[in-house]
Image (cartoon, rainbow, N blue to C red; front, side, top):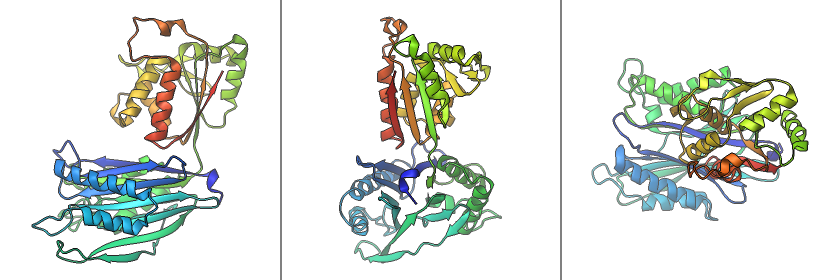
Length: 399
């Protein structure tokens, strides 16, 4: 397998315990500057609420930082465990964790798995559950009432494979009910995942994680009795998206812009009133307003043959930048154009921006809101958020 022809899609989904505004489960993912390593950490703080969140955050951030160091992964985990406080009553650590380190090499994609007291990480190849050969490392702490264990495994990831990380809010869902008196448990969790993957082999990491946590919450009667978190790491062929925004510097380049976008093999977004008019004129098709995206906040999207999404320009782009920076889940937004824009960005792996450089006098109006800057600035904000928060690959071309 040539690892350069595949991408690693990382995403997660989460429900907080009913009545809590903050969760005791924390998931972090990041990539180093060289873009040859991705680290994902899922930590579960003891109990729920603010105290659990603080301890899980501390654990997850320590794990992320140490995983990018030259230190051995197991030794890093031991240091984290030594640092964690122990509950005086229960004599157990205040947080558990799972870590996945993904390393891109010339001819392979390697993963190192570390587990401490979380449900075991699952490896699926399509809908088949594969066994993981784990090495157990024992650590004795005087403050704890028993020996503690760190499980480690090393694997090579292939196209179509997925690693799934869970907290016990998933495996213990339905605990005490007639159907699952001992909780959902791993056997039934894996059966459910197998069914989802069989029905939708191309499902994204985000959608798979959402399916799992929704099922877990449903087993608790639609009310989360604990923090419920699932993270998915998938290896697959990249999904490409191109975004054209702004007219080219000269009218003579209009046709070149349209050809660049229409010949693109992935999905397509056209953003900007003038830009969409250029596409309509050269394609010979009229853009029609999509009334299903009507909103008081954002101008509605339009429908244009051959293009997946057509939106207004600066207002929509600015809203997209803000929501990406705030890590907003698109599902929480109204059905407006910015939500559709975000959904396409989040479900893509490589995003190409084609930015026109002709000055639009309307955007220089001093009476316009201060947060609406020039197009190039907004595109820079979107690219930065996509790369640093969502680990997407981006590029930009100017016309």
